[in-house]
Length: 287
Image (cartoon, rainbow, N blue to C red):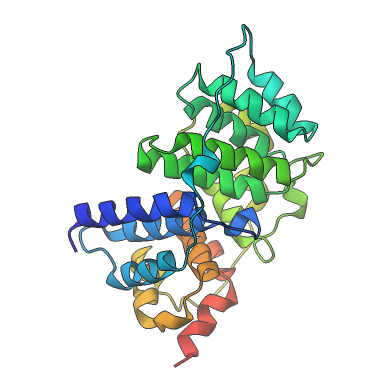
């Protein structure tokens, strides 16, 4: 399929995912799944993976969409002074109504993108669930060229309100590849994201040296996805080898995490391969 047609279809899927009714955790929101699909397809834009396109079409058809009016502001009188600090305090105090009031005011004097980065700065001080969503929202906004930024800001704010602030934010002492594979991979990607506020975000991100022990010998490792020889393209070969009906949203998110880490830290490919979740490999043996 022509890549321009693919982009058009993905944009429709993004728009549907943003307004999808979702009662589960923020780290499994449909927007994250569509963003992951987009990134996986982006591994080879000259020949978009037909299996991924088929999968996302079926997945998108299962989403129930809410009225767009639910993610729109009802504008009030513009206050003389409003600061990003006011929004932060309302969020930290879990004052939802006040937080959205401040967000509405700020959006009237900003194009929204700096606010989205500020929300990412808050999310890295939490457990990781809001971080995964807000990073997705930020990357999705780049693809959509800010067409749905109000909805993305409202969703991101709600994800932070639903999460909890931690003393050390994304504490590297409790992160490890075995139990927090996806989170670590997305932290690695965030270290390489082009962000205006990165100087404020970076202190809250676990250092790469803290989450990847470069001195640890991985020894001989199995490479069933042929990453060492095929690179990230091996992920697309993997998708072509597994039963379409067995691919779940969780598998898509895990594959995208794998892709992100391999893209930004290829020097650690052996380490990343050695700790890849076993559920990926299990599907290769199911007929």
